Length: 282
Image 1 (tube, one colour):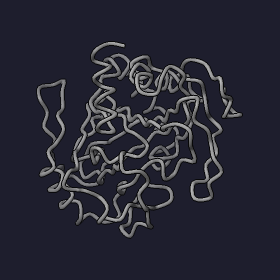
Image 2 (cartoon, rainbow, N blue to C red; image 1 turned 90 degrees about the horizontal axis):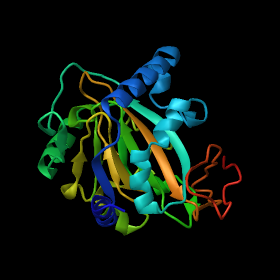
Image 3 (cartoon, helix red, strand yellow; image 1 turned 90 degrees about the vertical axis):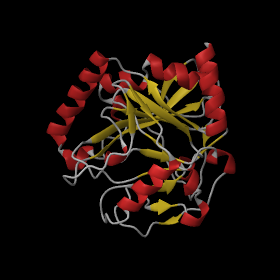
């Protein structure tokens, strides 16, 4: 393991996330965007917003993204060498208004820095007046995944620049250490979470929130217990990302009525499986 990978693992364990990790080169990014744009034309934006689920089983180029060596190098440094691709989904927030409100700081043409908590709070305040636009409420992924025996790691691979104005990821650093928090039905319209839940506002330490902007071709990764969210896209720019979930082979599905989930698209991403916890594993 390289020194830089060791440092990333240490930071991930402390903070619960990593951001702006480079993955795709210019050619790979161009080809991925062209392939996704073809699906967009074929199925329409209403469908591609959230319904391209587990299509890594259908399209070799999607499987290639999910098994990209630059992704797996970081994932293996955290989960170990034996890794299962649990689930994948494309998520797009499409343009809704003509007035962007940039708050992310871009350093040159090849780096974006985390946005301060003051800018996050300002962005949140601006978004309060937007009603019904697609957003993602504060939540933890493990609330929706019936998995035990090992962590769930989520990757967001940006096909478009993901900035404050088009609804980039927000995180609460270190919140993965708090365990599972209560979730309730969300009152604000537009929540993209399929079960429309959110963590009560009084339990979210929004003062410590960080925005995690990405350039297209970069990824963020986060732990299944990390508290995170994203605001509506109020820009004229699409925000498209490929979300991939990974687990170590020691993890296993559980029967939890509060977290009903079936895993029909599991694939060995790397290494070997000595446990056989997923009967549908390919």
